Figure 1 (cartoon, rainbow, N blue to C red):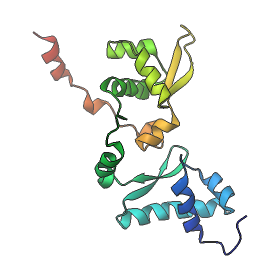
Figure 2: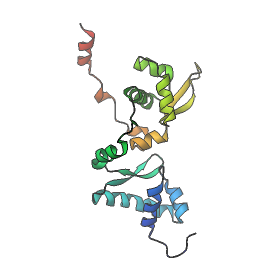
Figure 3: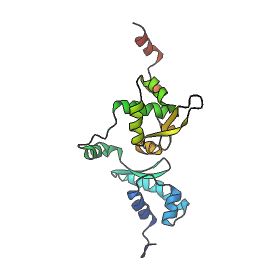
Figure 4: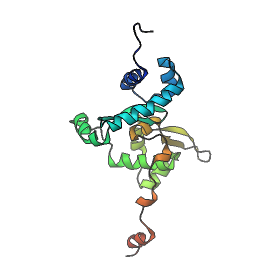
Length: 185
């Protein structure tokens, strides 16, 4: 253990979360900092509220299985421009479409993804797997096909705690009246 006077627990939480590469759970924080889980659970939402209230350029969010710092929404366009300057780290339209199919229909096979999109998803699935956004989650008992689902990293990157926080698809789909425009010549 470090020597000297122990900093306040809030400061220790900030310091640990600042260097964390992935969300950190309450139990892990409590164990690592020698504090009670109850105290950690009380402090984290207070810190998150304080950062938002003070208009900081970052937010503390509970996502996936833990807590992590994120860029404040109002600062995101500037940070994105800074970070991505000269880089091509964005997902292609095909990758975004495939990721949406996996997120909303998981567990789902490559064949089903291809049927929804109308094109083969093999290359895109490899890309999304390499970027740790999707992973193999099992096999279809009837066909033996590999089934894919999203990862905790996907939740983290999307700023979600769980898949239940995905927006509903119904408002984005055309209504029955709109479908007539596509079907009727």
